[in-house]
Length: 255
Image 1 (cartoon, rainbow, N blue to C red):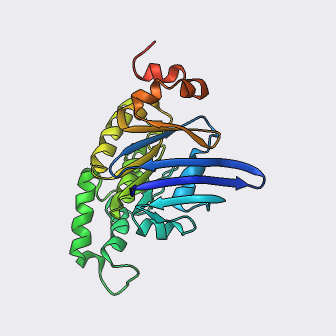
Image 2 (image 1 turned 180 degrees about the vertical axis):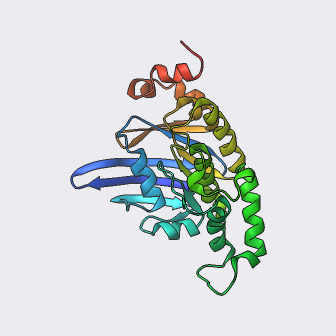
C-alpha cells in the first residue's frame, strides 16, 4: 500500500545524542494527523526531517511512495509537500495579494522569468484572488502583511503554504499565541483549506488536537509511542502515563 506520507525506522543523531529513535508512521491520503508530545520530545526535529531541513541519520521518509530524505526543501515542496513554521514566515513589505501570488507563480510554471508583467498573468492573478477568499482576507487584499493582526498573518501564512497546490501540508503550532476566539476560527479555517489534503500538525493545545485531528501521533523521547484515533489515544494507558494525563480528560470535558 502506498501512503501519502510514511516514516520507516527514522533516526536522527546530533553527535552522540539520538533525538529521533526509530520513528514509524504511515499516513493515508486525506487524513488529518496531530503530532503531540512533551517539550523536547522531538516533534520539531521530526518536521524538519520530513520537510528536508534536516537529513536523517538512518531510515526513510516516503512521500506518496517516493523516498525524499536527502532532498532539498524546495525539491520536496515541488513533489507536493509544503509546511508552515512556528514563527510567522511571510514577506512583511508585500501586500496580502502579493504574498499569495509569490506562492502561486512557480506552481503555474512561471519559475524565474522577468519577461512578463505580473499584472498580465491572468491565471496567477485569478488563483491568487481565489486564495484570498479561501483564507478570508478579502478585506485586507491590498494591506501590507506587516500591518495585519497576528491571527491574520497566520491565516496569510496558511494561504502561502497551500498556494503551490501541495497535497501534504505540515503546520507547526498554527494556533500558538491566539485567543480562544481566534483559535476556534482558525481551526475552522484549517479544516476548510485542507479539504482533500493530507495534514500533519504539531500542536500543544489539546482542544485544537481533539477538534481537528482524525488521528493522533504521540511522540515521546523521539519515538512514536501511539498512533490512533483521538478516543483510542485518550484511553491508552501508556500515553496517559508518558504525557497526557488529565490534559486529555480536561479537553474532552472530563474532571
